[in-house]
Amino acid sequence: MSSEGILKFPPGFLWGTATSPTQVEGHIENEWTNFTAQDGGHCRIACDNYHRYPEDIAWMQQLGTNAYRFGIEWSRLQAAPFAPLNQNELARYVDLLDRLRAAGITPMVVLHHFSNPPWINAAGGWTNAATIPAFVDFVKQLVPALREKVFLWNTFNEPDTYACVAYLLGGFPPQRKWQLGKFRRVIDHMARAHVQASRIIRRDGVCAGRKPEVGIAKNCTFFHAYHRLSPWDRATAFACHYTFNKFVLDAFLGGGRRHASTFIGLNYYGRVRFRHFRAMIPASGAPVKTLKDFGFVCDDMVERYPAGLEKILPYLQRKFHLPVYITEHGSASANENFRERDLRQNLTALHHAIQSGVDVRGFFYWSLLDNFEWQFGYTKKFGLLAVDFAKAALPRTAKPLAGVYTRICRANALE
Ligand code: FCB
Image 1 (spheres, rainbow, N blue to C red):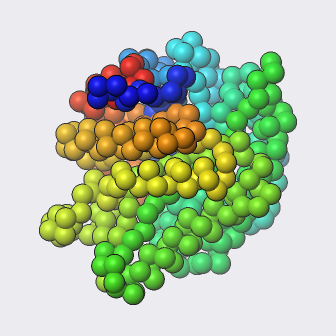
Image 2: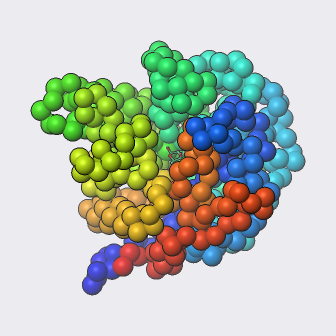
């Protein structure tokens, strides 16, 4: 699959982009509505994708993508526990799906991406076991309504990030710190909800003989000590790996639970190294100059570590025997050359993993648009398309990386 410097990807490979409702839609009523990010920004309009999705789909087509991973916002569809789905809001998502189909773009639908309806949050969110049947009811109603249009389902996006940043680091609502018991409870409840929701999707999501696919999106970060011999930094790295990777993967996919999923979604960004207990990454506030002096290659968030993809993919395959979609990868930087290099290095690593026998079926670039990056607001530029947030019309323009990605998608290959 490679000749003269051209790395070809398998036939039928999905090349997509990814977004999430809170980050792009705007006009949303969830725990983020009244949240003020570090830059003073909020998500109340975001990219106004709620109204502009036809234009954004036209962009996807122009980019040459054949897939799109996006979320269906639970808070739009149910006003109370076990309430019937809001038909107007459902119709908007149906229209979005119909337009995607007309554009030849395969949808992957995410059911939970860091947000809940207000009535769920008021009752303790995912720390409350009663959230499980409420979520399962949402899924039970949604799947038959969309089965003719969707066969790729993602139940939970990065449960590890959600539970960690909301209950350990205090960055996401409800902004709790060091509540390890709650962290574990959230993971446990989400994992149980995933198993039940997956059963429903696999039973009720069949359409014209086509079997639905379902999985979570797991963020796999490498945690290492900067000095290999520092026992404290090694212990910190191990504790993070254990809590965020091992514990979470076991909760969702361990033992018999593996049989609930038909694939694993991998969100891959890179690595966090610790020095004197400090996470040496921009997202934790480590100064850019210090990181440079230490020789770390970082985007505006984390250390880049393309080699990690070649380690994690075979590991996931060996451990779970499930096909993989790269449900997110991308970088945030104002330097487009840096971003191009990063993309090429990661896709090269991905290609090696595929060559070595890992069954990877698609890649979704995070993100289609510059958007509301949670607690950081609008300062992290992950988009293939820039959005001018200073203008009321929120115009989109293609960045240089968009051109690079388009060539890759069209050729199904990396030159
Ligand atoms: C992932 C999230 C996504 C976005 C990217 C940068 O952890 O799933 O919403 O924030 O990181």
